Image 1 (cartoon, rainbow, N blue to C red):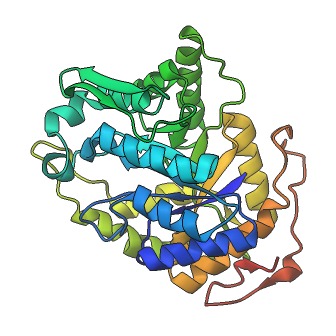
Image 2: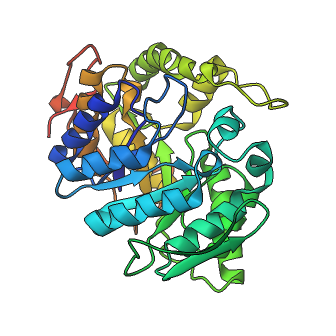
Length: 356
């Protein structure tokens, strides 16, 4: 299953336009990142943007990937999520994250100590708020309040996903039976290990791990050749990812990653190349990791028009994406193919758009 992942790199209005394009193209979902004080992503509230997109669409799923509990109060986020779910039902999907050690945890959140050890408590409060209970109170280290009426009260529990980069957080999500949101930096082996840790915790706490709808952010880049795709991405990604360097860490936080090395790492582990090869690589990863939902970083195309083209390309690719029962391809098996005569050069992307 191929969905779109947006950071609002070109601004929120362009992100809305790309979400509408994704629905027109037939994509299944749009997932919205949330960042503060950096140009890498220009959406400080994924729930606000999700509400706007939900109001302008009719079919597509709109999810948050993810709302950062380090800089949000779980009750405030719970109220927003319950409201969106009341208006859009399961078309709205809530994903949450611990976040990073950046200045927003001190300015907007509950401080560095909450970032270090308060995520589990905030997640628990959020889940109880979205459980369908009439009232919720808290008596923890970071949240203390008497019973509050849950308004609007969900008729049924609102689904929640948890962004993970560590085994500890994977186990936390597994204890609650919550599916995972996995990052673009992790390779298949790392993703499989996190899913396995999640499944062990889920089973130990009485949850059935089969059929879990985990999701994974991917840099899927179908184009005329791998060499052409790598050349384009080496041009586009450093310029886009440079916005991350504006993030100001709290005292004692580790330094940011080397962006050039990060780009090369992504090129090594992500599917870039002819459409059929990209489809086969995605299918192989899904079979190996058990993660079927792929959230594609379309803004890596480098400009709003090229991003719209990439959405169209991926929508066409999704029609050839093997079903979940398909086993990973063997060394002797031929990958699924898309007719490359349909690939036409537009917006300087060397034929990375496939006509639907």
